[in-house]
Every structure is written in structure tokens, then in C-alpha cells.
Image 1 (tube, rainbow, N blue to C red):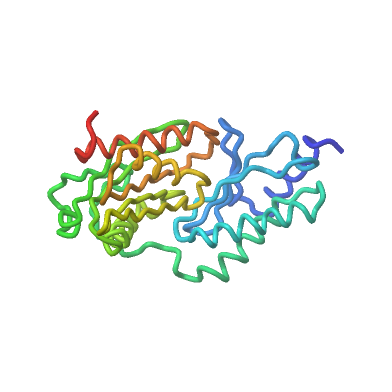
Image 2 (cartoon, rainbow, N blue to C red):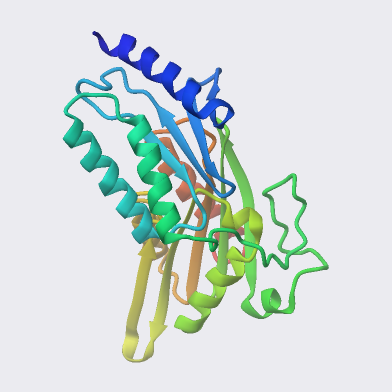
Length: 263
């Protein structure tokens, strides 16, 4: 049986098993599976699947750590290698459910969101009158959004003085339900320490090779005592290398908004 025939048969079976949980975006051909309230799996079928390539996938799971996402990635790869060209999407879904059940329990949801943000928009305005005192103390700026094929990118920047500010900034952002539900929150920071020592680090949050690009931008601009986070809300369509362009642009735009670099 050829790949297309196997794909069609597998999709029919998945629809029968999962019913309304298994959805298709008819415009893009991307399938999605709502695992639970906070975890959603997007699947795109490669023409070479299942005989010579696995499906492509994206995971919308704000409650998962980078370590947990890597566990899922490794398990998915293990299943693909074990099945030797057979359909695997059902096994991926069941494995994902198993991992979430074990790792997250009831801790996935972000229920302590203190920021008053329009629920119909991911845009955050750093100058709103109802901003918390913490926001003003940390001197946080939110940049404009970039939209491409239903994916949304937005940068956030904070001036930091020590590692505690790094943790506080990320904690503050994730208190916002919109940001917590982003598919990726990619971060990078640089701190100036005594004796001309620079401390720097970055976190891909599941978007491989993205954070190092933000860090490289900070290095080129010679910025210190600054942390940048770029949130990406995945729209179900793979953007390829364009996603890195948007991540860099979102980072640069928020640095401009904050007055840390010129236009």
C-alpha cells in the first residue's frame, strides 16, 4: 500500500477513535488533537510518511518544561524507529497522554493570572494604567505583534540587575494566561558582573536554535543587564526558516520600543 493510501486509512481510524477531538484545518491540511485543556498536538503529514519519514508535529503545551518536551520528542522518535515505516500517530497520541498524566497531574493550568488583558488579543500594552507595581519596578516593555500564517510572535524585554530579576521576569510573564499559553517562550539575557565579567544564557523552550539567535543579537548590540523573551503562538502552519526571522524581528522591535536601541 502506498503512503497516501496508508495516510487516508489512518486518518479515518483516528476520526473513529477520537471523534471531535481529532480536527483538520481544511485550508492548511494540518491535523490537531486536543489532549486536554492545556495541551494540543498539531500534525502535518509528510509525503514520505509513513514509509520513509515521520509526521511533522508541533506541541502547544505551556505547562510543559523544556525537559518534558525533550522527553516527548525522544519518545516520539523511539516509536517511529521501532515501527519501521508503519503508521504511528495513534501511538504518539497515547504516549503523549501517558507522559502528561505522569508529569503534569493537575499543574498544567495557569490559574493565577493577575494581569487584566483583553482575552481576545495576545497584544499586551506596557503603558496600561492597571499595570502592577512589580511591572513598573522591573521596567518591562512589551513589543508589537508579528503575524504570519496564523502564527503570532511578540517580544518582551526587561532591564535586569541580577539572576533574581531573570527569574522574576519570567515568573511575571507566565502569570499572564496569554503568554503562558504560547507554544514557545524563547529567552536570552546578558548580565554585567564585577571585573568586566559577562554572565549570559538562553533557553529555546522547545524551539530549537531560536534562543541562541536572540542571544547573538544582544551580543552584537553589546547590550547588558537586559533579558528578552519572544513568545510564539503556533498557528498550525509550519513556517520553516521564516520563524527565525520573525523571532529576531520581534526581539529587535521590543528593544526599540524600550528605547534600548535606535530604530
